[in-house]
Image 1 (cartoon, one colour):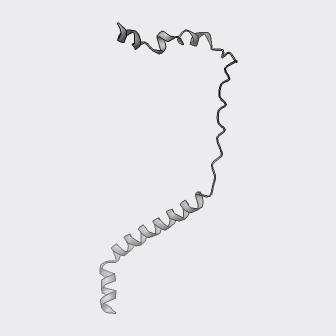
Image 2 (cartoon, rainbow, N blue to C red; image 1 turned 30 degrees about the vertical axis):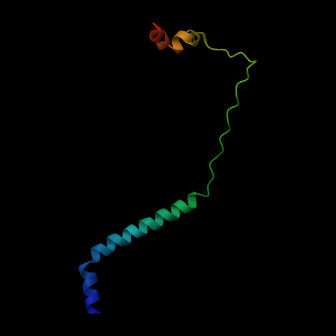
Image 3 (cartoon, rainbow, N blue to C red; image 1 turned 180 degrees about the vertical axis):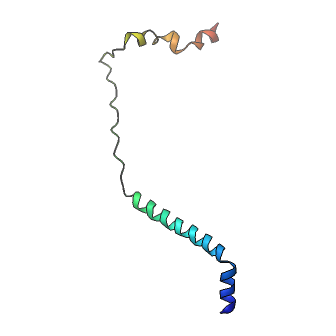
Amino acid sequence: MDTLIDFLLNNYIWFLVISLILIFALIGYLVDANTNGEKKPKIKPIAPLQEDKKIEVHPSVEVYTNDDFDDPLIKDKNA
């Protein structure tokens, strides 16, 4: 019995470190187990654009929405 007590007294720091790690792991497991039950709100999908409706664009943006601006490198490759 004396050898066990001497061993524990000489190595008490290691037992403290290991017990703290196990306690934090247990706390983390309990928190993770409790938060998995909560459900995230469902995100409503965006409705697809309908072809028959005309999309109105602000005039300042309309200047930049043409083929030359969207694909500027095509002319350089063909030249």
